[in-house]
Structure formats: structure tokens, C-alpha cells
Length: 90
Image (cartoon, rainbow, N blue to C red):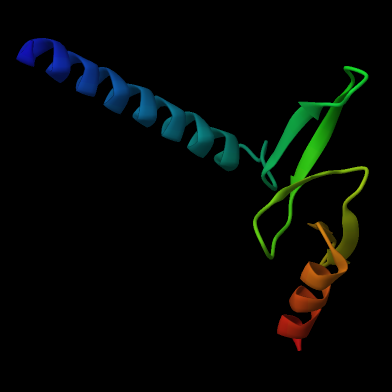
């Protein structure tokens, strides 16, 4: 029983390391500029999700509020988050 638990622990450690290395490779090659994901809507179409840089929630890109800074796009879930971001820039 003890050896099974050790093998499971090793398996999950290797899995976590593999994911971390893949993410690092993607960042280094420029594939990932901002955290994004996709979801399927009610009709079954996939829609890109973007990260709100203030509160950390993911928002469908079609309903996200946009702003740009230094040539990069920023996305927000609400006017409150956008206002907090703008207030922090001053």
C-alpha cells in the first residue's frame, strides 16, 4: 500500500513538472502573450476567454470591456475593474 502511494505521488509530481515546462516553453517562444482560454456557448460555438487584469476573473471576449496600454490590449469584466486599473495608473 505504501509503495502505491509513493508511485501516485511521483506520478503527480512528474505531471506537474511536465505542465510547468510546457508553459515555460510556450512563454519563451512567444506563443502566450496573455492568459486566455476558450469555452463553448449555448449554441456549441467556442468563444475565447480573456483574463481581467484587476480581479483575475475570465470573461468571454465578446462581453469584455477593452482598453489598451503600450500597444497591448487589456480586458476587464466590469466598469469598476477598469476604473480601478485606470486609478492605479495615475
